[in-house]
Length: 89
Image (cartoon, rainbow, N blue to C red; front, side, top):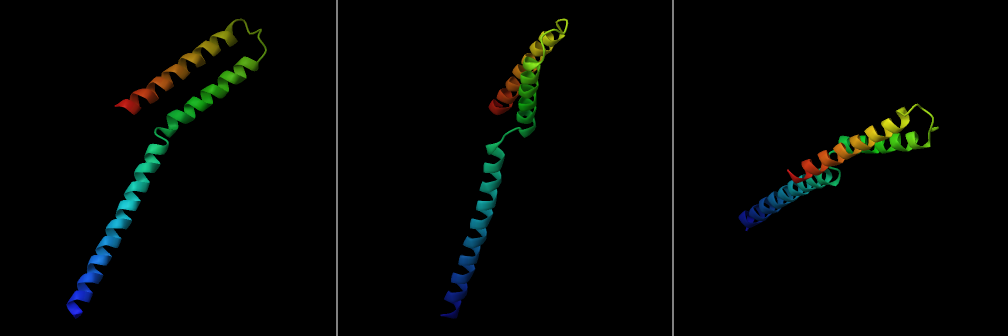
């Protein structure tokens, strides 16, 4: 009878350890999947904020403001393309 209790306790402990390990691994993977490439997403947000600031700036800048907006638009497109590439490869 004593052997059965030990076997049951041992199996129960092993199941508990495996369950905890699976929960930790699952939580880690979900966390990684929730925000892939956090730096690229942060850069995208900063570029969008810069674009907004440029668009609300006064228009007379000798064409430099318009050129800056175009360059920021190009940068936004490149960051989005980089995120998409990383998500599919």
